[in-house]
Length: 226
Image 1 (spheres, rainbow, N blue to C red):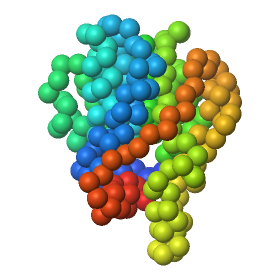
Image 2: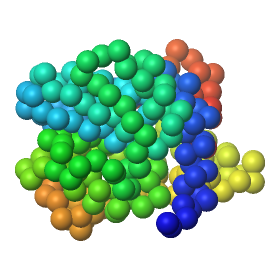
Image 3: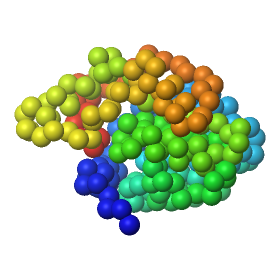
């Protein structure tokens, strides 16, 4: 059995530590972005859906709500996140949650009609493996949604990464590829290398709303893996 990289295990632990606050600080504030992605995904009624890197379960629940009688499975590699998602949404008949690894999903090949991954790919230790794994999980003709951050210069919380690395003298290994996948041409190339077809790509410029500066700073510092 191949030993897991220390950085990946550290990232899992980091997500576990912020599980209780992530949903309110981030998932709810980015729901409109993910919602636009689900609009493009446009799943058919009765579809079987999988939400990879489900975190607090918000995207899983949103996906399930669009399946018209279908069911959505949310998976995450952090057990604390899965437990939290179950506590929030587990009472619904159309969602279930499980611990699983995006880079090597244990699901039956071809078992999903649609697959979503919202703000998850950039946290994968091996993003190419995650795309291949997602492709195997989809049935022929199935559809996948990947939501990633865009250019670093356009993302409001980028200075927090610089702050952590300079003031704390800690290289934020969580973030080296954070904005890479939003660069022009990167995702189309990766999708092609995974043997998948790019149907549509959209760049979205939008905002996240906070009642004040203090809450915005607190969210940026306390609400994510850094």
